[in-house]
Amino acid sequence: MLEKVLVASGGVLGSQIALQNAVHGKTVTIYDISAEALAGAKKHIAAFKEQLIKDTGKDANEVQQQVDAIKYEADLAAAVKGVDLVIEAVPESFEIKKDIWTKLSAAADAQTIFVTNTSTMLPSKIAAVVDRPAKFIAMHFANLVWAHNTAEIMAHAGTDPELPAQIHDFAKSIGLVPIMIKKEHASYLLNNMFNPFLTDGLSLWYNGIADYQTIDKVWMIDLESQAGPFGLIDIVGLRTMINVLKATGAEEDAKIAEKLQTEFVDQGKTGAVGGEGFYKYPQPAFLDPDFLKVD
Image (cartoon, rainbow, N blue to C red; front, top):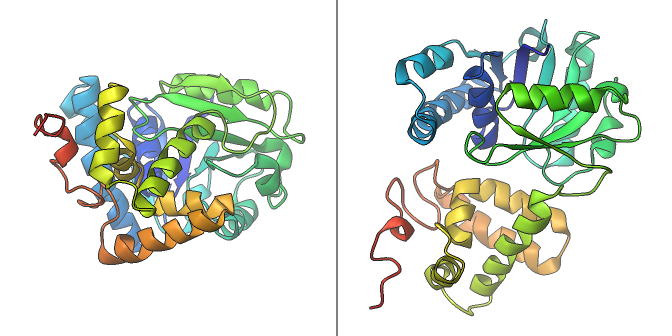
């Protein structure tokens, strides 16, 4: 069984992945590049812990004990020593992923299995830079892992044929529903359906067709959803959305990414975890009972 897990990056999703593993009994270490980044990871864990308890009804004292057992490490060689599985959750930049996987390849034990949580890249692209492509596979987690508990598992042509089944069982062991993807396909299943919804909403806003609250309202009313595109972008995080937009290669998407960077992220508006994005948190306007009422 895969019991000792290293999560590479304690960002918004990496911290959730670490938390999900911890509350299911795994021995968890979070690696990040600096003491400052690890301090941010601890803040993420603290916030997501409360959300997990609220959503799942788990015993607060037990969860706190599991959270307290998470280790934090800024030395990659020390972090990866003796682990069974590495789950990489760094930003959606190939250069960043190439750098971390090159270093992990040099430092990890020979038996350690490598998993990437990339949401846009094919696993074969990343596998080309690791030292053990047969032990490399993609497993994509959804935001709010404990509630949206799918694990999209995607092998590449060089993956050991037995590895997908092993990762399938690992996903189940941490409370996830394994989604086995038959062949490589960019953006998996969820994001092939989800990203166009977000980017189309952004396009309507960027081109002045409607303000973001109006776009959210029409989606929430007509599709009976608890959040619209911009509420969900806040939950996903503005930095992640910028990376998704840049990855499409479309000219307008690049312009929208630039607008999000300069008008939001550069101003400290990074999304729900940061306290403000399109909406202010912890009480965003779209959750107000009056948000959808007729004026």
